[in-house]
Length: 125
Image (cartoon, rainbow, N blue to C red; front, top):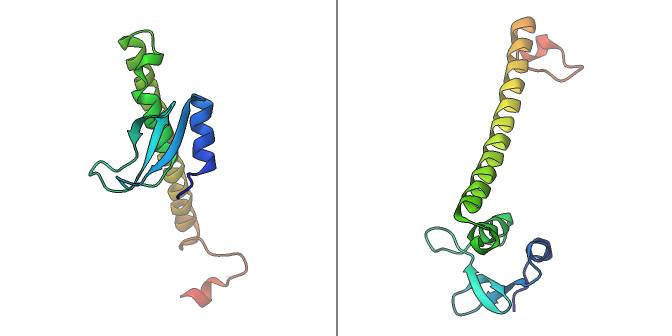
């Protein structure tokens, strides 16, 4: 029998102690259960196998609409979640752009890409 990731199970239980993960041998997929009832089968959009990861915790939280007082509160949470994802993606892109800019400045000043310390520029030509 397969054993789920302890880290993912701990994250699910932190969200709701009634949640657990079991291997569904019939479907050959991980199943998230709540008090013994299957609430989600872990799979890719095309139905293929997907290992357990943080997306499972996010998905379970998103489908748990009963935790919200209204549809507006549920939509607000989804919007905030998407906003946080966009901010992370923008920060990552910004860091990448800054790194590329630094490399371009080095290239403009020294006429070459970044070179390790102690390497003679003439030997690289």
